Structures are given as C-alpha cells and as structure tokens.
Length: 366
Image (spheres, rainbow, N blue to C red):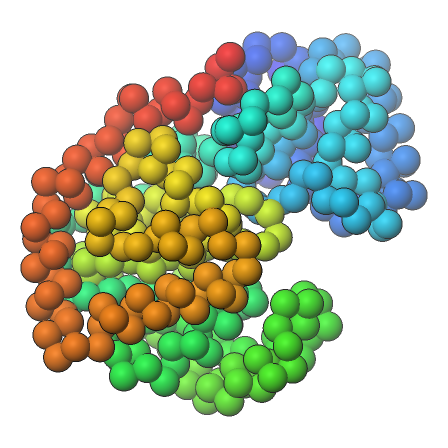
C-alpha cells in the first residue's frame, strides 16, 4: 500500500512503485519536500516517523522524478538537501531516492535509484494509465516541409537568453518559433533571473520584449495551452511537429537540476532531428542509451560537455547561423532530413521498444 503525508491528488508513479517494491511505502514528493526549511523539516520528520510506526511502513521513497532537482545541493543554509534528508530518514526506516538525474546512470548508488520517468512514460505510451483528461498522440508523419522549430512557454533564464541571441537573426522569422509570455516582469523579478543574467544581458533581452508573446498559428490561446501530460500536452500531432525537420528543444533546466522532460521525447516520436539544449551531458546520455543523436550532422559534441551555459548557447546559435543563413537553407535541411529517413524511422522504433524500456527500468528493477 502507498501512504502519503499530504493528499496526492495525482497518483502518477504510485502504481509502478507498488509493482516493483511490493511492500507498504511512504511516498514523499515535492508536495511534502519543496519549500521546507531546517525548522519545518524537523516537524515533517516527526510526522514521517509517526506514520512509519502507525502504518508499519517498510520503505520510504523520496520521489524526485518529474521536475529538475539538485540532490546534492551544497548550500544547506536554508534547508537540508535531498541526500541529507535521505540519510536522516534512513535512521528511521529504509529510505531510497528516485531521480531523473542521469548522472546516476553512470554512477549507481545503493540509496539512489535512477529512473528517467519522463522518458519512460512517453516511450512506453503509458500516459493514459497515470494521468486523467489526456489524449496523447504519439505518432506523426515522416515527411517534413519546413526547417526548424523551437517552442517555449515558461520564462526560464536560458530561454530568455537564447531568445535575445536569435531575435534579430535573418532567419528568425523563417523558423517555427514561439515564446508565450512577455519577459519584462520576469527580468525585474528578484527570484532567479538576476542570478544568471547580467544587467546588460537583461537590458538586451528587454529590448526585444516588444516582439512577445509569439504564438504560432496552430497554438491555442496562451492561457489554454495544456501542460506536461494533461489534455494531450505531450502529443506530437501539432502542425510544428508534423512539418519541421529539426526540433531545437529548450529543456526546463540547464543549471538548476538534471532532468529530461517530455520535451526531449518529442523529436524521437515525431521523426525529427534533435538539438537538445539541456543539462551538461544530455546528448551523450541519450546516445549512450542507444538513441541516434545525429552527431554527423548536429555538432553537439562541441557543446554538450560545456559547463558555461551561455557559451553553450552561443555555440548552438553559431551552428544555427551556418545552417540557416544561406538562400537554400530550407531545401538543404529538408534534403538532409530525407536522407536520414531510415535512421529517423529506426530512432522512433527504438524509442518505443522493449529494449529501451529495459534500459530505463534497469535500476528500479534491480
């Protein structure tokens, strides 16, 4: 049986956890853990201890899948990090962390289970089993008619920075690009942005705010666009997926946790060539688990290990300049995409294969 401290309205991962662990579990998620302080952690820990005794629980699972999260955050001035929480709970009851952080794919840890939940739920076409009010479409046509897409919603700092780098490029209006919110208020916020962007970089981004929001023709009103797995948000039957050869994915996090979301899954589902702007090593990880990242066409090895995220974005934009600036850019890209048809088909078949699922489940099954 699954127990929780707070009510979990979305069951999501819980049925899968019972399948693999087959015992009474205390399931802790961001609902309990996000925003805690050292003081509130002591109160929460007492509630957890009481629940363990009351319900005869044998296992605590700290579930950090679904959203970027830094497990070993060195700054514990305000709150304990996830590893500290795990260590303290392990004194009460056996406690494991489940994480999307793919660095643990390379360094297995007896107390930390790497489970790329977002990749798994999309690749296995299992969204309907875990989320209500959804109608996910996993398939798309192979033939494309346009060069590149890049869809952006939430105002993460790296998306704002990337927008400021490409807004005045000659090819900007020729790609399928969207950014659904104005950025000025976000730039003026004290939460997060100024930690990453200099005043000069903020001023440059602000100078392009008049261009926003940018909605593509096939996108609904900004406030009606579904999120993540709800109401078909993870589908690839939209016009941009159907018609564009390359998908520039701006992942949720570059610097505030390692996670690959449904955004990374979509190029493989939609027969697209992926360019993943994500955490350090994201492209290598995807290649290491067997996906074709088209390194002979997209020079991601020149930026994938770059820890300076701004430099990484500049390298990507330099490549896009080379790719998109010529008068024959679109026809050249479409010709390249057509030459890759056998690889794109193989990529999609492998993405939905049992072979990949076994790799994604390897640590949670062991």
